[in-house]
Length: 334
Ligand code: NAD
Ligand code: MG
Image (cartoon, rainbow, N blue to C red):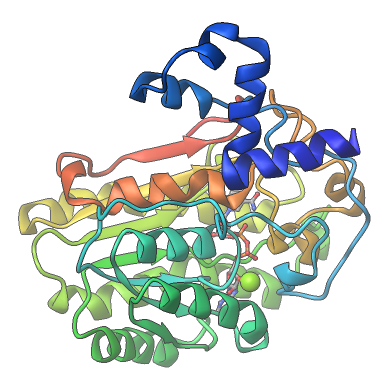
């Protein structure tokens, strides 16, 4: 089992394991000359064994958590994502860009040729610096703008700093999110409810409103919603409704901004192995068996969603607006 996992890692990182495995089972592949067709076949990998499966070690962290301290560390495409110039010269602001889906998007965007500004909560500096190093390694601009998204003043300054640092802005990924699992509505404090609404609903509103006058036609706005928008869990009373709101603003803004040439879309992940879940987002029992209920028997890794964030931002997706693209391992609804 452990050896399986190691093999799986190598396959992801180098593709070599997959090539050897294909050669071992297929004398036809092994014996013939390498064609494009053959090398494409060699890259096929089984999604059920591609990434770690539960059970996971119990590992609660105080909010907002550091993914570098998780076991296993979430895979955000650090060693696997390969770009092909799809976002050359673009300028992106990504909230929650230090970890999880935001980090996967930041790495992918840089490898596709974009300059990237990331926002995160100040205590996440360690995770953020890893992302900055990876963006710089691609020769792209990497801007850090830490701060608390629950503040309107901060959200306004975030946009202005991103525009100043990047020399403009044409992609906004409103990805940061607050999720705290609380079994009974009786125990949801007004402060907690307010924090969830501020982070997940107000911050995207403040950011988009501030940025709009600066966004050229061709710009893309992407919101991270969730399967929770359509099939809410009982312990996520506050969070789930913010994800329904995100799905909804994606659709209303797509109508409002379409005539200006600005596309607005959403990504709806299912269970993905991130710091959000181990820093209050899921109950301990759920954390340990996280993702076991999907049809792949495991949670998603942020890297598996990176290409969706790229696709929705890329100029060749020019007819996609008001869409929500899901990725949830065979369960849930986008
Ligand atoms: P994550 O913890 O890695 O990222 C969430 C980020 O939100 C944090 O890194 C933090 O930087 C940011 N954030 C939260 N509150 C903030 C605040 N007040 N100020 C500044 N930044 C703040 O977890 P993730 O799972 O990658 O989350 C990214 C998005 O994906 C969220 O919107 C989340 O709701 C959504 N989502 C996650 C899952 C999942 O299973 N992990 C499923 C569906 C949707
Ligand atoms: Mg984080």
